[in-house]
Amino acid sequence: MWRALLILVSFIGLPAPVQAQPAPPVLSWETCRGAPDAGAGAPLLTDCRPAGDVIDPQGRELWLRSVIEQPEDGPAQALYIAGVASSQAWLNGRLLGANGRPGGSADTETPGRYQIALPIADTRWAPGGNELIVHMSSFHSDLRLDRPIGALQVAPYPLAPRYEVLAVIFVAAGALFAAAFGFGVIHSLRRTSSSLTLALMSSIAALQAVVESLRALVAYTYPFHVWRLVGIWFLCAAFAILLVFYVVSRFWPSARRTVVAAAVVAIAATSLAPGFDLKTGLALMIGVAIALVVAAVGVRRRAPAARPTLAYLAAFLALGAFLPQWLLDLSYFLFAAGLILPLLMAEVVRLGRDDRDREAALIRAADRPNCLTVATSRRVERVPLDAIAAVVGADDYVELRLADGRRLLHAARLDRLETDLPPGFLRIHRSVIANLAHVSRLENDGGRWRLVTIQAEVLPVSRSRLAGLRAAMDDATLDAALARA
Image 1: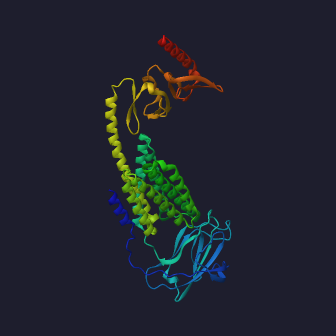
Image 2 (image 1 turned 90 degrees about the vertical axis):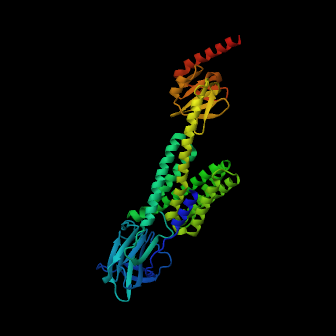
Image 3 (image 1 turned 60 degrees about the vertical axis):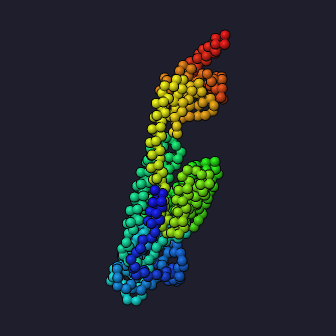
């Protein structure tokens, strides 16, 4: 199973071959002083200078100019703009289109979509050089990006959509949501921390798959894009921390607090990295690297399942290092699904086996007197009644507080258990039953009564049950005196 998943991840993670296409022209942009033409024609530009590597319209109005040669005969062309900005574009003095309305302030700007394509008719091209002008502004983004403009390029129209990538992401997201539901059901039945951790990991990875796909599915305005990037980083960081928590809880539990704290600090520090792709990729890879070290410790300690976990984490770490362009778009979701789904199948098999063992143990223990048969998440245990100091209600469960200091969670309601326990047990509060054989004293603490056991357990006492408790304690004292006589 693990080897097959590794081969699948490695195979799908490789970039697919594409047909050779003419390379789009490389545009050299200039920034200029500009003003709209009073006659609604092309804007008037002056003082044009090279724009440099980063085009940044954040917090200002920007006029851009480029001269492009007429493309050779081939597919239709379009101007592609992707970034946190509103924009307008002109080609050879004629308006190509607008994305929102750029302006000199937040009041005069209307936010546009994050990405847009402005088709260029073949008749719009002139022989030789063609003047392309783009007017931009960005006053509605709450956070500042290092590279606010992701694309400003003329390329064939339309671009081929990446349906195969979206299909794989959707399948992985569906599988992860199903896994989250399965582990949620297991947690409701068994209350194990591992099932809750895996349910959260599945939910977070599936939710990130949805958020990651929004750009291809929804034409949202550019202010939303910044918070989408923040959400992707936060979800990836949360998944990485939970991955470390799960692996260290399984293979090195004594170091859990130290390792998880170190992981939180290291992953949180990725928020200082430039660019959200780098932030997100580092958060995931740091979590995987820490989990890999913990799995290696598990291998050294000969912990079950440590070797396949180590191999799986190492394979993904290598894949992310050699193919970073596929890390967040595809490989991460396959990694999450490939890690979590086998664990879900193994957990379902284990629960079925545990249920059979528990049923057999309950049948064997049914005829044991003076004992309470307790079904915990891991085993069935016979607890002598005289070893129970108190019973405390916890929703549909009760917590047995034993004389030796242990606490067991038992699948029974307090009301039902009250009728099954012998007379030595008394209900002293709506959520507490006390074993009078373990009572040390009854005391008043600031107007509130409480019962203290021999083991120093402090139990609340309801005023409505105080008289009955005093009478029962007097009877117990009398019985003890008669027994000594």
